Image (cartoon, rainbow, N blue to C red):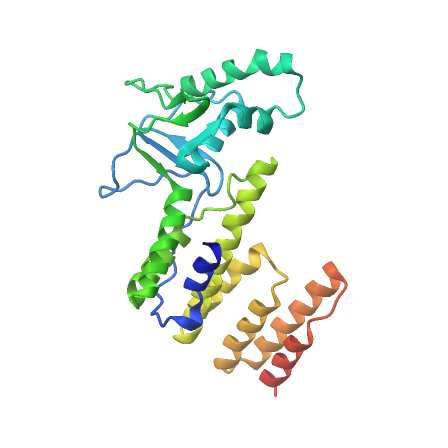
Length: 291
């Protein structure tokens, strides 16, 4: 699946017309709503710092999640396949180094804390976590908006649109996925399970950005090409392919000095941080562009 998604968003295989960059500043703690947004029982934003809310006008109490483990367990369940996790898996994930007595003392109170937190300051009480057949799961009778699911859905829709040769719809879905990505999955949480998912979503977002950059370059939209390139380099400043693309943008604009500055910037970063020189291919690109 991952391979087919990656193929979908390769810029060289689809001709698209880029739109203007999103000028709205994103905040890891902002809550965005719109009249057209579907009404759901619970919203989870996990791409970036975690946000969980039922009604954006009735936020949970500041101390609702006094136990971070309770919040993380809920996010773990919500992002698992079928939104369902065996009890033993929860124990192995969150109490792996604990004695059985500690687990017995803390497990059920922690689950109880999850239920209480999700009803904090809410008029109508709902039971979002159910225990069935040895597993904890989200109550399927309630509705959810989970940004990681939407992110994957947009990429899948882009893949489908690509197969149907619908360039406009490919771009629409890729751009929508990009807008959802406020930052790393559950930023600030460093448990192994979160790191694994973080790496996956980061990789997908990087590929989206690279394809959007290529789209913009192909359409000679230099401003947008530089915008997306800078976004990639903020997360991975060692990407020689992106530095080379930026040099090509400057060369296309006739800015020879900017080409040289970009190459020297790359040289400095690689030498200072990694103790290496740019690759032979990158040097060749610079020499060709700076003739």
